[in-house]
Length: 143
Image 1 (cartoon, helix red, strand yellow):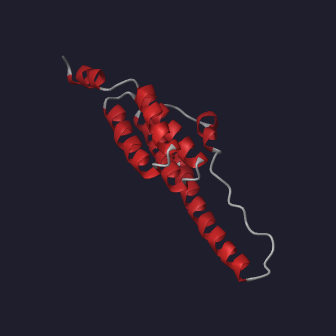
Image 2: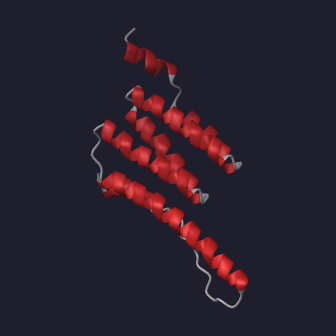
Image 3: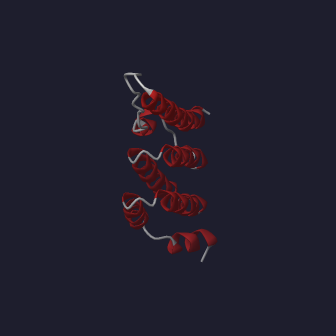
């Protein structure tokens, strides 16, 4: 049996992994799920099963972002773009448009006391994290 066929035979259907990892995220295990998404998707990519790697990474990125986990979601979105490139899969706005789920950061509207200033500082910190995550994805997609 060739090496590629052997790799294909040892990987389960991607939906099994997606279901298991979605459960972990929905239970709040964001970091553990993140590490599993990265390692499992790398196995699919190395087996040249790009479509399955893309399904896994898209599912993980969007779910992490919907849960407000911007750093995790952005990292998986960048890996999604890397898998597109490695698989030489043409892409455009139709594929990348799915990532419009980067959460928005609400800013406090009135500044009457110290608590309002603290809230504003926290919101600005969150906005910076969101911007860095989103821009890393955009840079990878443009590159």
